[in-house]
Image (cartoon, rainbow, N blue to C red; front, side, top):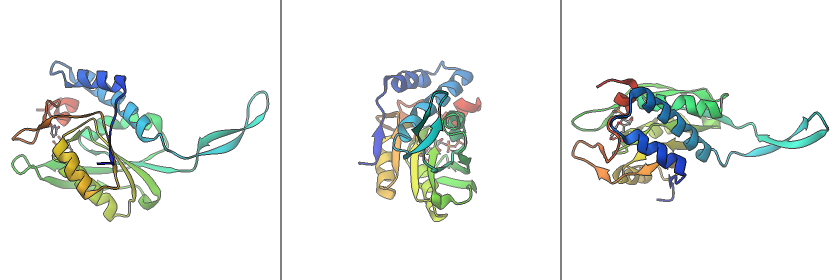
Length: 209
Ligand code: PRP
Ligand code: URA
């Protein structure tokens, strides 16, 4: 699965362990998800193209690199993907933002769409899809399906924890889409929750049960 990138930075591992802890409060959880989004975005945007731009320093004029006119879109999967937005926007404040609303049926674990609004010219943008959890992979696959149906081509999926079963399914469906994850956990349980995981990311971010 060449498209899967499990990140190894010690800061990611440390913050992820704090995130897993059942005693981590909602406010701490939100802060950690946001910080992990920054670190994940930093890795995922490593290959952004640069171009030299004439720049006047107080001393002289020089050619200095800036990100070359790449149009970015961030399209979080509701709800939990929203928790990663602040962190990603702090890296790329000019990015356009779309939303995909998906929820998993509690019995079948199949994703159901309830909202999809994407920025204009989606076919010309690098698209980041944040969602902290990739479990069966159903939601991630459906989100990429929607974006591709609407013309999106260059897509990266940003997760915090992923299950091996979900990554395999995702890679079969979308081998062209890179997935960044903070950790590949052991397995899914009979309710399709990731183990050891962190529980329900949306509930922990928003303080719902
Ligand atoms: C969670 C999570 C992912 C999805 C992952 O969302 O944020 O979107 O489950 O599971 P999958 O890989 O098996 O599809 P959920 O459907 O619980 O919705 P919520 O964010 O509104 O709580
Ligand atoms: N969604 C979550 O929030 N957590 C899981 O473990 C699986 C799906």
